[in-house]
Image 1 (tube, helix red, strand yellow):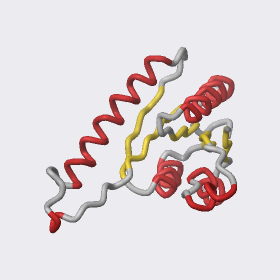
Image 2 (cartoon, rainbow, N blue to C red):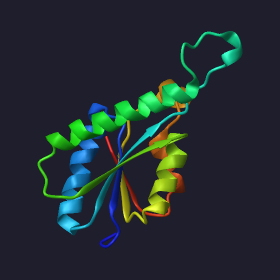
Image 3 (spheres, rainbow, N blue to C red):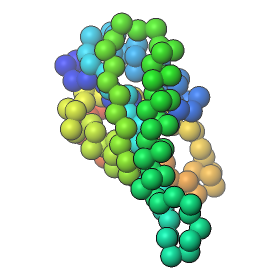
Length: 143
C-alpha cells in the first residue's frame, strides 16, 4: 500500500464525496499517487424501435464528457497539493474499477458504499461489495 497509488471511484454522490476526503487524506499521509475514476455504464438501446433520437454510442460519449466536466469541478473543490489523475471508463462499474486497479497497480481502493440493507440491498447491484470481494489490493469502503 505504501508505494501503490490510491484509486478512488466516484459516482458524484454525497457518499462518494465523503469517501474522496478519506482517499485524499490517505494519499497525503502515505505520499502516494492518486487516481479518481468514474465509470459510465453503457447505455442500452434498440435502434429498431426508433425511440432514441441519438445512438447509444452518442449518448455514452455525451455522458463521458459530462462526467469529465463533473470531475474537474470536483477537483477544483479539493484543497490538496496532490497530483490527481482523472479517468473515465465505460462499462460495468465493478468490472471497470477492478480493471483500473490492476492497470494502475493501485495499492488501495477507497470507495463509497450506499449502505443499503434488506430488500433494497437484494434488489440493487452492490458495486462496493463486488469490488471488495474481487480486488487484489485492500479496499476501504466508506459509508
